[in-house]
Image 1 (cartoon, one colour):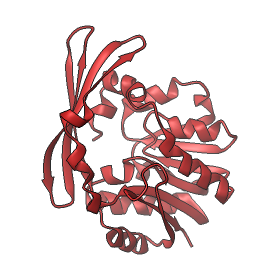
Image 2 (image 1 turned 135 degrees about the horizontal axis):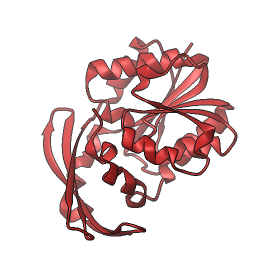
Image 3 (image 1 turned 90 degrees about the vertical axis):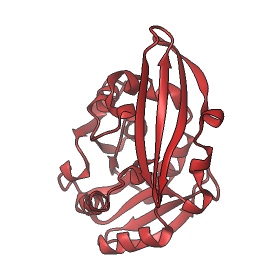
Image 4 (image 1 turned 45 degrees about the vertical axis):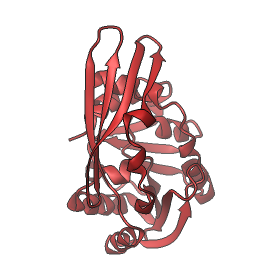
Length: 241
């Protein structure tokens, strides 16, 4: 089940305005160009920002996401007809012979259960053509990013066109081994409604991810630094033989 931030229609509608800087997608767009990809599977496509970016460049893109409300937002954007949208997780995608499969942002970490993670890797493998590339990022646990997930560091008020001011912040709820749970709170000034969404991310060690990729039938080609967050994330590039 998708988190409320993605599944609640009112929260999904403000997701993009509250996170307008998607410079983190530049590395994925660059890898798509570097790989000469023509067909791309965007796993956890959310509101479709990356899928539409690639489709606008002439690539054949399939976007899959378990959150219907986020997909509704994606389908309402200009150029949405260029993308094939699928409601579900990666296992809902048929073998499409993609050149590239991506999990941008927090997608890989949001697949917190080991069985779900393994199923996702297998599904991506099945959707790729032989020689196709899987690319995703995950935060380095050693940097303990969750220490910054508190109201003092995250509080803000955003004036969303057509919605009004939205006050928002994040609170850390629990750290249990590799699992980190936090809550986002959103207060709508127009009517005072308060909506919250709890999320859990799994912080995997680099060697754990490498072992999972090998078990999933991939050959790890490279682990890069994330240029937008140097020293804080791993970007994995793994190929289906």
